[in-house]
Length: 282
Image (cartoon, rainbow, N blue to C red; front, side, top):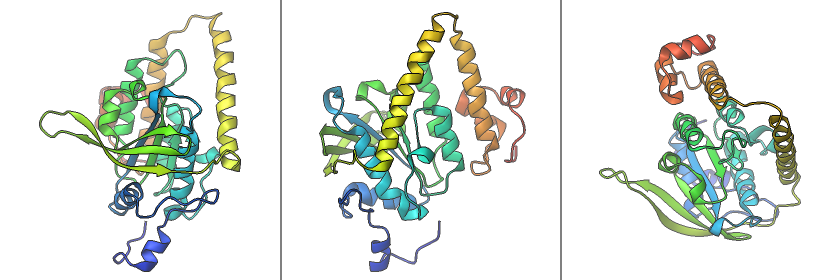
């Protein structure tokens, strides 16, 4: 990302939120200013979107898409694409992080689900290790969840922003903080934001199709699992190995075996025994 010689009119104009379905996020909003501040400092921004009272169909996905389509083009100079930057899969989410250009907005829908056989607390803890590695690539990651209860405490500690949808087109934004001395988590209200109905946008329709495909795959897996015994420990080992390989392959993160081991909760010897040498230096 190129350096900018001080904020000015041209700088502000270039970094305005892009218009989405005839609507533009307020350029002076706390949320947009935080987005600019984080990326200009070379840091990531982590956002969690939930719905009040765990409501469904109130627009979590349309809000996530609206933010992605508003922000992604500012630094990447390209429109946001659901096929490239949205997923329901943890492994693909991490691969996108290591492979996408700075300024990209990555969306993980229904982040609490890792399919029925993996949806337990230890898997959420594992994902917190992966998210912890996402710090300084100037990426925005957005996770959507049914409610605040659906996410592990460690992920809350790593998040920067919590957005709680109150009704279609309206949501409350909070800054996430962690106490320096007691480690207590709290969320401070900052503002209310609004967004349009984006259901007819081509990229939003792709997101909807991805959700339908995910549901179909889940039903198929349930039918297949009825006839075979699943070893959850083996599934977990395979997922950790895949994540470790992705981290080792990434030249952008430049992590050694010990660092990767801490992320996937394994030893450096395990990392080297279960992965192959990639592009980054060990």
